Image 1 (spheres, helix red, strand yellow):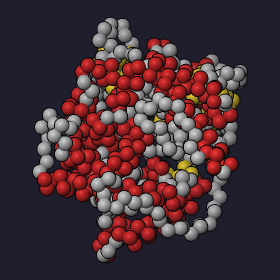
Image 2: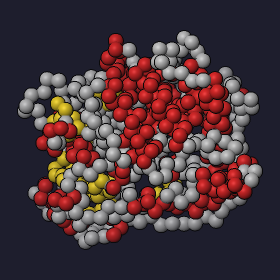
Image 3: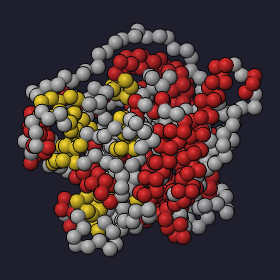
Image 4: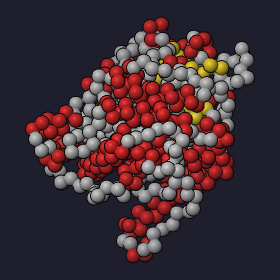
Length: 575
């Protein structure tokens, strides 16, 4: 349950850089909140059963402080449990004797089915919010098989599947797959020695290097060719024969479906060129801004009277600028390796990796390939989430070993322990960077490009439906003031009045980011609704804390009854 990390980091980077032109950079600190009553909510644990159990259908992992009714509905899956058990049993030639619900994903329901011979399989059923019906499941199955058999990636084998709910007695789309071998990395990661963690990171780099070296004829998602109509597919490779079982089809990536995009009709590919792919990104965002009845609440910037106020017009203006400049921001054709389309596992965290319990440096299985896309390497490349950490980050592209602070000897024992831990976390990131630079130079080139202002303008355009158009347009104005800047040949222009408006909006957006950060800092990680949701047992505390923050924000910025009402409507943390 987290924000898209790279866009959010860029928002904060831009915020810090623009503080140099703001009159009074500030760290927002809200007043101390009063403690709410601690309420205990029991998590539902599904028992082993063969009958239809309503507990299997609903989402129980968290609660939503934003639009909860719709969010819960989009994660409810109804299906015939007995028929699912029969399908699973038939796929492995056994009889099913028990079903257990696995922890919820944000887009899927997962069950562990045990057979009479002791074999266990996993059933995965997509929630309505997972993506387009048929395409999401069909692509996931084909992607798993492709990664397993063509790119030497350890992936569970699929035993049975159906991407058409209306064609199966189960009553829902499903995938029956091999239970992942090994132990979940989440259960042992913190117990592993640093050298073991480093060796595991090296194994990840090997896999990523394999993905980055693959060759595709276009951009989209992977399917079995027989699951696509001819007009909706491209050959997998330029040299693909008629016997090739895989093909490229419509893209299934998360940012093509989340935040209401799933319900809007726009070009989902596949595309032959990187220019077509990036143009489709901008057209997607613009179509959604125009057609969604209500825009999704911003996740990074607090918006309302006295701060930056988001409008459809401002979002469309930013997207118009994007369409005029994106071709001038692309990596040079001479850097073709980082422009080429590649598949990528974009969610390598400890709950998606299984390792050998006897040798945890050996990866036995990677799970959760839903929504995998074949996209430019400069879009896909990312360090694995398992080495992300909170605290001071290393400079971009630095490969120098981190050191302890100069005043380490003067620190308290607790502060020294924290400094040691920070250096260990930083050292792991450094190890990943050093190995990537040597073992996967194309990925390293993609990282170098991602650190450029050009790449940042491309990256943030992907989320303008949700957030960031104020900062985005202000950054464009900054570049236009530089006659030798990255936009000098783009043909784009702004009047002085437009630049002044953009810069004023940028400063207000900085303040909005600071206030959102202040809310997060004040109520803490456990209560702040990342992605709109919090743990079920903390929901009432979170709502109470957010209510108090709302009162402080309104008191600070609402000068009239009209502005108070505007803040009531704009507050992002209400149902």
